[in-house]
Image (cartoon, rainbow over all chains, first blue to last red):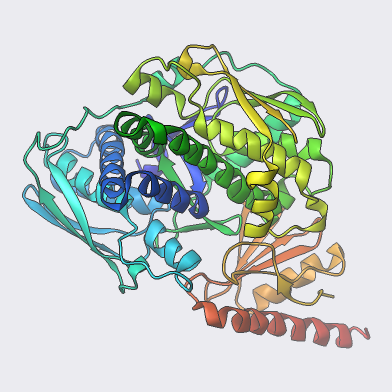
Length: 421
Length: 105
């Protein structure tokens, strides 16, 4: 059995699992923006702490489940499994050497640090490390391999490629338990994810969306890290990432701010929605413009209705959930529904029923789907740059987006109504 | 037989270039030329041919439409990518032209 065999897919809800733990595909633009969002809201130190812990908790759950499924029982077998898993996900090659007392890890081509340098390195000087995900992973490997309690290992990235080091270098250390106000990790498995989903209804243009989404899912089955542990597809770096990493870090960011500075919470919420907009603009946009897409679906035209359907198919193909089209009136109104979305099970399990709609990623995504459909002449090969982003989604051109139904609030499905400007 | 090399619409730094075919009917010729130059073919999806050079550069070819995208290997330093892309393009174009001449074109 191999890492490959750990992957499963719930077709009805368009959810993907690794050893029974939900994961999705995102590109480096989104991943870097997500991490920056957490740091912007909480500050560099607290942001790094939240992101590292979120990664550790997420990877702990998948490593425990994968070890069980692949019968890795000894520390050596578990560390070896971890060494294979991380690059397979497209997160880079990480050479880990660890024991029950700590250890070290190194990697020259980690998804976050490498892609940060690729995207910003020529313009921005960075001193802080960029690989909280790899840090959390290394801590999780140490805990799982040596049967240590959750929260007993921590990793510090001491040198980072993003800060112009030749390779990223990590120190893994043991820490006493109970030192922080740390909630118990929230583990979402297949059963919890499916239980949180509503009925996967058919929407407008369902047959076409389902067919394309299924084709993209098949394509993604062949996606895995190359010899450096990276995935270059759709003209971006793609990584399979555990949903719980995104969820814990973003919801911890928001709930911490709500407790500490309630007046700042709306800003943090909008930052979380912005991450959804950035994802759709960059990831979905690059998928649409890629040769892979052209082979799968054909060349793009300028019909906004096509783009709406294509975006919903992409969301399904990347494992985001069963997103479907309820209503679309060009230049006026776009109503998107979801019977499943990867934010939902985590929030409900960790925080209970929400008192108001909290589908931040879903809301930002719905907004950006409408903007990409209405504002871009896809047949004319647009350039997806900052200028176009501001034109479509910048402050003065924002559509009105309202989440009218939210599964986190107890509704059977989630619904986003986008009224175009 | 190929359109001039130009940057593709990707927000990566000089990694993707278009080298589309003038007609989809040249797809087999491009494929043969690339294989002759040491590229290895993969088929990640029906309708897409991925040709990988020994250096790690990739040509993604959509035979149905004639679209061809050159992806320079991502470890190539940013300042060298344009030059590397031009080099790959010229190597292929030279064989294209030679074949055309040999066929009386």
